[in-house]
Figure 1: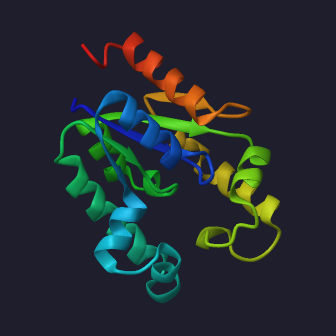
Figure 2: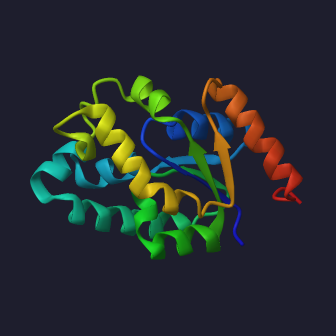
Length: 173
């Protein structure tokens, strides 16, 4: 197993915020897959979805993950849908540890606000869309090595909890 830390989970669970804190605390580099893709494409994720569609974006996400996985000692904040491809899960497992940040639909609703800028939530009732999408993805998120519930916790508390769990599991041996 490699020494990268991959944060997975539904949108609005704080993967990027917690990832930056973890990277700083552990003196590791940080990469956000969405930012990596946006820099490479020169456009935002919602624009990519709007112009090219979700399938194209998921391929970009896969390619980004391959590039990032070759690095060592990186905390990676992944897009919420990265776990939808088995090969992405395999890449993350081979090159590090997968940590899923889990939250209730209410926490996600608070964190994503109106859902604007979240292409997979476009249209319809936001709460229902969140619940349905979370239910569809739960089986994929559950494949993480570690699952951390983030409800009613600060990013700092979540980061500290992750570090403690990684130490318990000998990740820093």
